[in-house]
Image (tube, rainbow, N blue to C red; front, side, top):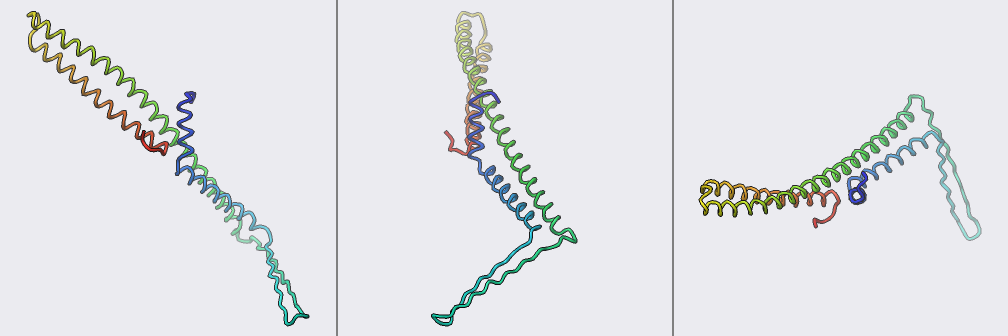
Length: 188
């Protein structure tokens, strides 16, 4: 997106979104699991140093060491590694899906707000014209040029535009609230 306001909104939404942060933590955990699965191919070494003293003069120390290495005959280690890799890919795909949904939601809401604002401005200017039209029709009725039906029809159109303005204002408030939810901020 080239609009700097939209870019800023998307950046704020991505920075504040808890689902995306959770997805990133899942990726980190999956990568740690993959690292552990890769390390399973290496031998493991265990040391258990021990020291004991019978008196002030005599101390005994023991350092038993144990080394073990699991041979992957049945593919247990390989399957564990593949499973960990799949978990990493799954976590990364989920994070990308969350990211895409956030970006799409912010962009859609941003453009919907822009469209409703334009509709609202157009409806307000139309309402001014219809109000003038109602006054003109009333004057024409007084002059005997139109009937009461024409005046009532003109007034009905004017009130219809006013109702549309109210609906657009409510819709705009709802869109602003939706944007606040996407940005994870309080409605403003």
